[in-house]
Length: 159
Image (tube, rainbow, N blue to C red; front, side):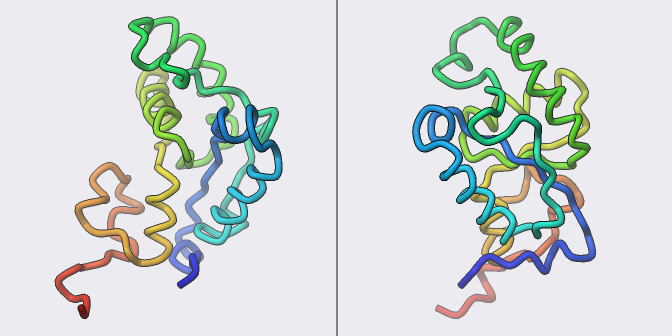
């Protein structure tokens, strides 16, 4: 089974990509960022991915990693994250795909705090949605535009 972006052909929902610091900037560089984009484009459609600038190894940190989410310095974390919030807003994308849980939590809070009007979604959620295996109970945090796309109903599966 391969990811399929047909679900987004008519919807045309736009996504941008958060490059996680640890795996991209601090470890494997642009090569892994390109692999990440290959999978994302297969899942949402190449025409529906809007790049942040800068991106890949030069992308800005979201400000939530390295334990900063739990540090107790919320005001400072959000102020630092304003750079990321502005970067995401500049894309005009409806969703920011995060491959890292810390990025997801920080970007979600940034969007709410700075009225970003974009949502953040885990990469695995988009991948599962594109494969038609994302269950109804795994969609509670998605926007109305994605909540009913390719719904997998376990009770109808053959075992």
